[in-house]
Image 1: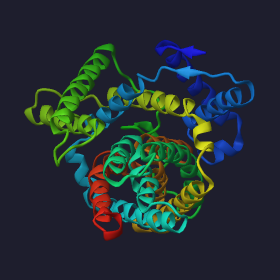
Image 2: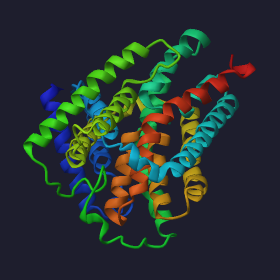
Image 3: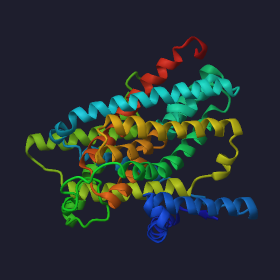
Image 4: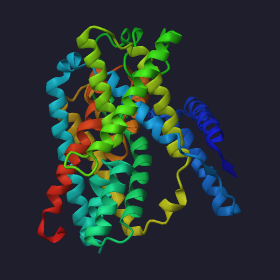
Length: 399
């Protein structure tokens, strides 16, 4: 069965509806705050895997919409980034960036050491470390191609893609249980019950937001400008020392657009409309990413690689509980931030947002988490990751 772009969009929409029902009807999924796209997407992916493995029946999807949806989500993060409001979390933003740097270093250290112990080239440890896990598919593909060309690592791209896919799944699964474990150890913040009256940014995606058709059109225009200019900027930087992924450029243009228009006094971005469009793009992207998983590719990973990735998952969970949570304040905000860190520390920023949405929908809002996690996970992470990777590649046995 080959689903075209419209069939894939229909399937993704049904996956989201299915995920919502699964979470509502299954107490463990609800108790551990498993995101709806993860619940529905994995169930469909397992069904496709069963059809492939036991009946020889293949289902293919047209995934051309995934990239525009991902870019739309990151553009919406940029358009919601009011630099004046960022001052409120300025110190916490810097502290969280330092926490993230620590995880990147630990992921690569654990990866290189275990890869050597298990008989792999040490470069494979970097691929199964911060490159594919904190970096995701895009970073994995870029560094994988470099490792094939310069270091002779066979199947580097395939290894990176499999590890990134593994991380995307696990990042969406472990964040909720980590948050549940931590939330039980912090007091309930004052004003919790009243904070949902006025939802902001990406918190509480199911809440009503009063918007109009002209506001939606204006928001689509802003997103389109962010995508167009971001794509042009990414192409201009390609091959230079400042090269950045297209989604980071789209986010950066969104930040400039929002704050530039605001400084000129000619237009004020309507945050509610931006958050609605961003949440829709996020949900559809995650549904497509998870329902199109080729689980048989993950099952083909050699046992030593699975052991390496299991160790990385244990590292992420331990780091979120004992480092991220403690350094970020040992409070409710820190628990939500830890869940988000699990999302992009193993998978991607969209997974981090989905994790935090699932947690805050159950336990209450966290303005700080939704302020700093998207910016660090979407923008600073790629720059920091590149520096850490180059640091490891400078070691004698990795040259």
